[in-house]
Amino acid sequence: MHSISEIKDFSKAKSKIVFDDETFLVVYKGMYKGDPGVMQDDEFEALVSDMISYGKKRAMNLLIKKDYSVKALCKKLEEDGYGPMITEKILEFLNSFHYLDDLRLAENLIRDKKASKSKAEIRFLLKKREIPDDVAERAIEEVYLNDAEDNEEKDPEVIAIINQLKKMGMTPEKIGLMEYKDKQKLAAGFYRKGFKSENITKTLRLETFE
Image (cartoon, helix red, strand yellow):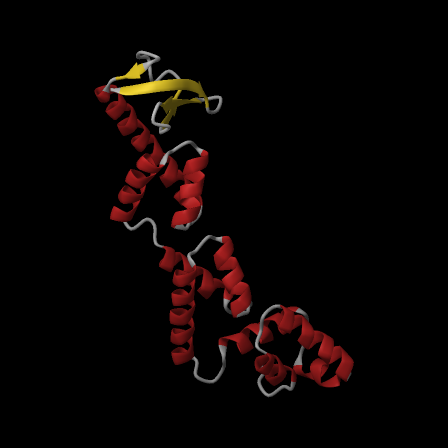
């Protein structure tokens, strides 16, 4: 048996059942119709099973719309009232079908952004997506290593700087005609974004530019 200390609203659609041991179970209103003071074991297990099913559907709906890191998805489920025990079962289900993969998510984001962002900017984006630091660094290392093997002539950051310059309407001719102070301002902007100074200098000196 599970002794209930209180049942209160969690949202318009859900109730929060709080037990004497301070654990809780959030269910849809009307799902629990038993004793307000004591919940039988079979009732508890049935409710947990039902909420796991609802949680799986909720997680799948979230993942259909966009990729989530494990941590970010857990936060969304927590906001919906799914406690650790239920979330653990949802994650087991998702992992069994490889629907969650922080490394894959990080690598995809890096491949999408490395042609226009510095490594520092990419690290910031990975942190915003709540990718663990060790996974982020592993993904950066693997993606940039593979890129270096495929493109031996240019550092990926140089390519990103060139792409940003092109978006600004810059050409080698325009850069060549710029005054020193304007070139320094341009360089400072790239430096603040986290690009390496040697890559900025190399590009603005037109040592490399497509």
